[in-house]
Amino acid sequence: MPDAKAAPDGLVADLKRARDARDDAEDAVADVGESRIRALRDALTELDRLLAQYEEDATGTGDFQSYLSFQDDLVAFVEELDDDLPEREAFESLLDLFKKRRLSDADFTEARNRLSDARDLVGRLDHLADTRKRYADARQAVEERADEHAAEVEHLERLRRLGNADLDAPVEDLRDPIEAYDEAVREAFEAFKSNASARCVLDLVATAESYPLVPFEPVPGDLREFVAGADDAGGEPIPQLLEYAEYSPSKLEHYVEEPRTLKRVVGGNRTYLDRLDADPLVVDWPPAPAAELQYRARELVAVVGRFADDSVLEWLHAVRAAARTNDYERLRTAAVADHELTDGEMERAASGVEDDLEAAREAEAALRDALSEY
Image (cartoon, rainbow, N blue to C red; front, side):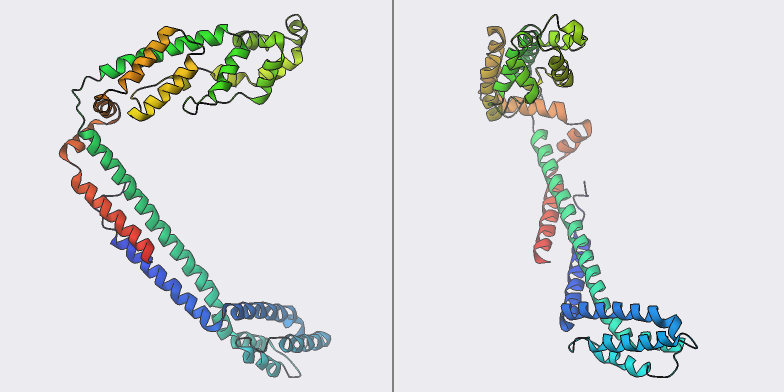
């Protein structure tokens, strides 16, 4: 987290400078025309190619045919240049520069020097790209710092809220029914998975897909299809299917009708079946806010009631009833504070976070404003 009291002035100044530099670079390109400068860059590239191609053979007492070819190619190149091309006169001047009976290395050096202003114009494109990159980087830095301050605001608001928790509140009034339910539903699901047919267990998981707050991992398609269609294997408990998957095909023929399919499908989904447990059904500690827990408990009743006995449902109803009491949020806040806050956070909350909170809010607002302005 950034220092809540750290002024954002430096980042804002960097952003303004980057914006101004980008605008100046865009104006410099616009004065000439971006398309005209790009055409100039293409012309310089082609000219450099010509000079590099002929410089060695056409100079001094070199190849006379290369000298003639260079003259022809240079004339053709200049004549094809657009009349509106920036620095066209500098290109045209090369025709006179090279119109002599013998060329030297100095002539090629002079030719390149005459195009220095053209190269400076082309450099405006690179400068524009650089300033745009610096501007994008400056914006990203401001956005990241604003996000950091937003996270600090959220953190401080949480500390302020939890710092006011009544740590002497009787949180066991919540913990006892939740822990009793969680333990009971884990035992009930383990017994269900161990003894019921694989078809029944996976049907339950498929049914839970209609309840978004009971987040079982969906049954793999091939496993669901095999268990539903195999009358013999689908009627076996999941531990038995996993044991069967370890058998050789010849041994397995004595137990199921499709031994190779079972080994492929059950063996291929062993990890899924091993990991299938009651985690999506437990409430856990500390609990969710009242409205969320009430809604989730309603969905849990619909799912848990399909395999667990009344004793499990009684604890679930007790949890649901606790979430409806007027004292629930006070108890939950105390539970969350005790469970989540470190000693250091407790001390900071106790000493007060209002100044830091206000500073973080102001810093974030200043950075968001700068992003809008620049």
